[in-house]
Image 1 (spheres, rainbow, N blue to C red):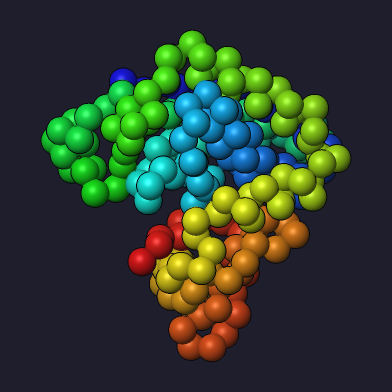
Image 2: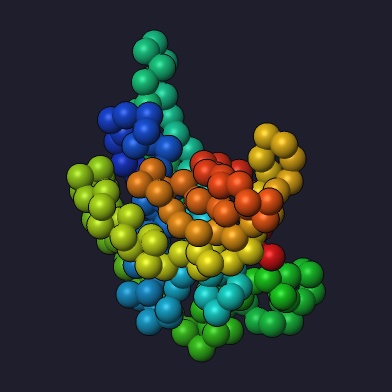
Length: 193
């Protein structure tokens, strides 16, 4: 089984702040899951949680805009954390090589405890947003498993490949292309090769 939740994450004061909302949520979710279970959770750019090289949690965020002005208003975050699935469950779904659960990796956790830790971390994130940006950026960089890995991504010229070399101050992924060019990836799917 998994734990799923949606939560009003934070009021947004600028479009730039709203664009990084997914990453703030990923940092908070990573902290909440780690606190509840003791699992050494990492983040795959942009905002998936990974454990021992496999996907543990997917996160979706939706930015809402004010009707008349078109200004950003708030972010709602939704996520599903794999808690008790077995290897057989993932194999039957064709996900055996790419997904895992807390219990499967040796970190069983009680659902209510996980929910409390997760909601507590998201509440703290709401209080921190956007003033503690540097702290969240440092935490994100420290736990981003994409860094140093070969990746593919969609660019204006089609699919590109390279090595993820960093995360800039706006949480964009920096990629050193195989062709020697440098890329800044702000959105879209990045696949670790």
